[in-house]
Length: 285
Image 1 (cartoon, one colour):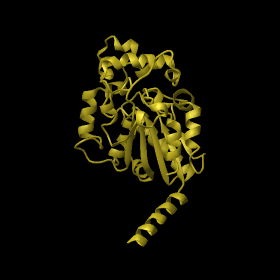
Image 2 (cartoon, one colour):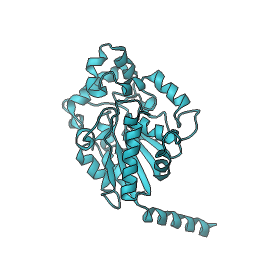
Image 3 (cartoon, rainbow, N blue to C red):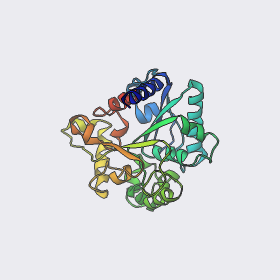
Image 4 (cartoon, one colour):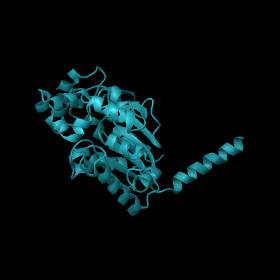
């Protein structure tokens, strides 16, 4: 038995070593044309992809995620860019890093393989999705924006006002999608590949604390303000319960961030407190 287990472990290690691994960065709500500069930053992208055996095997997705997740401009665009990347680079193992609503678009692809002929190959090549602060159960802030109250002006920079993606992320709407169209939440079939979340639990914006400036001080101040309308455990945009609703929790921020720092919703897509280094290390497994 010991010999069998050893041989199995060696075979698995050999399979990983001989594979051609690539990583895709999938942004959240918004229409992106240069997500490297405008959403993730090159520091984040370059450090994470540096953990690959071939650091050139990466793609930064640029799609219109102001649309519903199933829209051709959203999931269709994502499927097209992932397919081009997989075919062009000969990718056999795909690691997908999503942020916020990007997790919903990727979950749509994994939950609906017959929707688009490109989906099955993407699912087959995907080994896991590292979902950074995914809005898997929506957010009360989307409800507030759609209702047109005071939040609309305050959250325009974060949500993009009243677009279809914001409408989709209302809590009752996401509950319906999760119950009928998406896999991975409680009581639903499991997703075909690992979907694990990094959960942001708090926001720091003290002016005297240098950590408050990572990801943008003004953005963190805004997120600490909106946190007043969320649960005590939140990243300023999403409750922890929403971030944890689909798949499994990989870790909560304070458990692994340098100095036990929390990750605001903006910081969970930036090189803050060692997050990029954790993701870089993950590229090799």
